[in-house]
Every structure is written in structure tokens, then in C-alpha cells.
Image 1 (tube, rainbow over the protein chains, first blue to last red):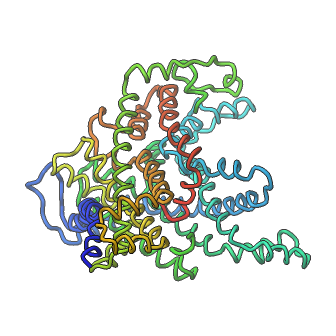
Image 2: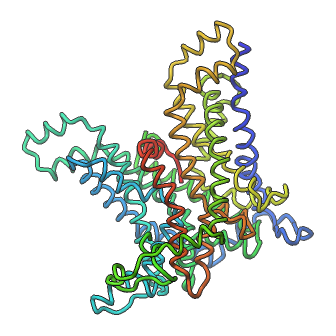
Length: 290
Length: 246
């Protein structure tokens, strides 16, 4: 009995850090969101109730950032999902060297997003490789990141490239749990490859596809590095996302209370997305990948 | 990336022809090694990762084991909170962490870059699950023989934890090494920046970006990841499948 109680002591080191650098900041942020708080003017700290939230919900910048974020999700999710599914199918059908291809496809997921963004910035640069190719093909230059219409799609393209492999591996893992006999039986019944995909594989991996939708949406809502490195929210705020907006408010304008309200709105949004997608799509996405 | 970093000067090869025509050179790497900001960024990244990851692994083993084996009040609460933190947008803790560490006088120091990583819940949850699927019979037998909890943990549990701790360690390494938003905010002087932060801010200078140096630094940031990936691909994928978040 003594030993069992002592066993719980193992929780203490991590529990302490989790409380101080996890739980406490979470509660602190909630408190801050009801304050006007500028760390440079501690004398002006005061309680403002829901003013920060009201200000966000009536601020054009907030809605603009939200719209940009939603555009980003709508533009990338279907492409990423389709490509990841197709790639997982190709990986599953490769007979020789599957390990190598799997590694090659997955590797970008382990790279620093800063490095990926820098490489794409060099590709998109006015004097970069993409424009070099266009010039070699006697085509005009494209202002990938300087054109307000093109900047967001350019970032979206990079995001698709960077995340397809990650999701393809998730879907591939689900494919592998499908018994070979079932596929074999379907083929013996004379189903074409496309029919097998549609009637057997797709329903089988559906829970994981839902999980990918969820994960990708939540991640897209947190996009920051890409914007920070490539465009800093510009040109003309065309790539201003929620988290970048939050960062600017907190660390350029030192509106820590307002930024905390933005953070809690983000938290709320992600929570709502979780619940809605779970309701709409059914199943328990949290259980899907294991 | 590797190609430009091996070139001369700071320009990008404009045409596909230049790609092959420009001479190879180690000038940018020599510049990094002979001091300069990139060397400092790399050193900071190495220090932070080398200190944070072993602690993450140790904490994950101890806390994971406690959550899996011991029965105590609040166990369910810990599990629920840790799980919630996995999904939670990390940006929520950004401003409070900045204020907290600034109040503690730790802004712009190594502890500011290291301590928040030790709160990471992924390893703890992963190890809790790992120990739940591992039989506790050996531990029970040792306990009956009068072994202390500490001895059981050190001499029975830890030696059997290798595969699980490898997953936690490798994923902890990737997350710590690639971390960006928190290190960006928690450092103020150039000499405290980690590689990702240093690189991103280096690229901010509006005119005449030195692409050669930048992509040499990027290669530097990528090399350890490449090595880790080559040796621990299976562990990385397993971590991803179990919900390791980047």
C-alpha cells in the first residue's frame, strides 16, 4: 500500500511543470482577456469585462483574419485530402521499395516549417527558380508573394506540399488494417480496382479521413510560421491569419489583454469545430488513428 | 536548398542552366563555422534540445508510469487535462508565458527556452498507454520481495521502457528543435535566438537577402533532423500515429 502511494510521486516532476507552464498560463490568459493590460504601462491595468471580446467581434481586422483563415482551410483541405488519399493508394500498391517511397513522402513532415518556408520563399522570389523557369519558357514573371491575389494561394500551395505526406502516412496505416482476404475476395467477384477502392477501402478508412479533416482544419486555424516568413500578413493584409493578428496585437502593440481575448476566441473556434465535425461526421475522431 | 548553400555570393540561380553552371563552394559553411550569428543560433538550439529532451524522456517515464500503475485521487483529472492540452491551440499560452517568464526575470535566457518544453503532455500520455499494455507482474513480484518503488522503477521499469522512450525522445527532439513561436517571443537579443528563429528573422531584412547564407543555415537546421529520420523513422511514424503534435 505504501508502495502504491509512493508510485504516484513519479507524477510530481512533470505535474509541477505542467501546472506552472501549462495549466496556469491557460487560466492566466482567461483572466487577462478581461483586462486592459499593457506591460509597458502597469499603472493603467484595469478590468474591462467583456470589452476585449466585444472589440474583437466588431473589429474588421478580426473578421478579415477569420475570413483569410477560412479561405485557407477551404482552399487547402479538399486538395490535401484527395492527394493524401491517392498517394496512400499508390504507396499501398507499390510492391518493391515501399519503405523508401514511404520515407520520401513522409520526410517533409519532420522538417522545420521555417526551413520549408525559407526554401519556398527562395523559389517564389522575384529572382527565384520558379520565375527562372518561366523566363526560360519565355513567359512573364509572376509576383508570387507580392500580388495580393496570389500571395495566399502561394502559401496554400506550400502548405499542401508540406502536409500531404503526413496525412498519406496516416491513411496508409488505416489501409493496412484491411484484411488481405477481403480485398482478394472482392477481386475474385470481379470488382475493378476503382470499385474496390470505392466500396471497400474508402468505407474502411473513413474514420481516419474524418480525423485528417479535423486535424487539418485545426492546424490551419493556427497557421503562423508560413505567414511570418513569407509575407508578414501582407500584401495589403491579404495573408493576415488569426494567429498572426494575435501576435501583432500582443507583441507589436502590447495589447496583451486584447490578444488574450483573441486567443480564447481561437480556442473557442477550435472547440466548436471539434464538436461540430464530430456531430456531423459521426464517430470518435480522437480514437481513429491509434 | 543544398545547391544554393553550396554556391558563392548571396544570389539565387535565376535559370535552370545556372543551377549547374555556377561553381560549387563551401564559402557559406566556412562563414558559419568561423563564427557569426548562425553558429550562435545553432549552439543555442543544441543547448536547448540537449537539456530539454532528456528531462522530457525521464518525466514521461516517471509520470506515465504513475498514471498507469498507481491509483490516486485526481488521476482522471490529470489524464483529461493532458489530453485536452494535446488538442489545444498552443498560442493560447503564448502571452501568459511571456508575462510569467518576464516576471520571473527569465526572458531571453536558456531556462525560458527550455522550461516550457518540460510541460509537454504527449510523452506522458504515450508512456501511460505504453505501461498500461505492459504486464505489471514483474513489478508486483519485486514489491513482494521488499524492493522499494525507486529500485523497481530504476531496475525493472526503465530497462523495459526502451522502445517507448525512443518514440518520446525522437518526437521530443523534433518538436524542440523545430519550435518557433514561443522561442521567437521569449527571446529578445540576437545572441539568444535558436536556429529557426534566427533564420526567420535573418530572412526579414527587406533588401538583398543573402540566400546563400540563409540556405546554408537551413541545411544546418535540417541535418540533425535528417539523421534522426534515417535512424528512427519507425519511431517518428509511430509517434505521429499516436498523436504527437508539431
